[in-house]
Length: 144
Ligand SMILES: [Zn+2]
Image 1 (cartoon, helix red, strand yellow):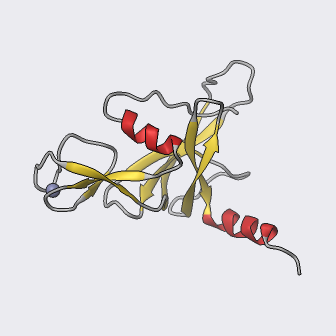
Image 2: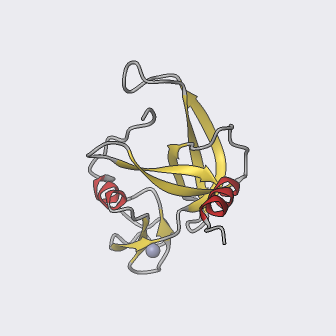
């Protein structure tokens, strides 16, 4: 599957480990409870360093997107689209991921994260329009 392939660093490794378990988590400040994402060393609101993971719904709105023409694996189809999503649960929180729809995104449209198994080692969080998810669940409901 083509697309953005993350390279976890010191600050994001633990987050990717959670994604591998199909969990979407953000940091929650120990002192004031402010949620933050992406992972940072201390709370911007109160400067406390202590924090814990808090699982939240992977929901948000499309802030912007880019079309990447850089293939990660030669020969696979490209270009592909990477969206920047403004998280509903985290004020100011932005997350990047592959766009999973047959059409381009629209600014401000509501999206939901879906976990995608890329290969044996990697699960990523992709983003799909809520409207598409509604249609899909309709398709999957049993016909009586
Ligand atoms: Zn705080």
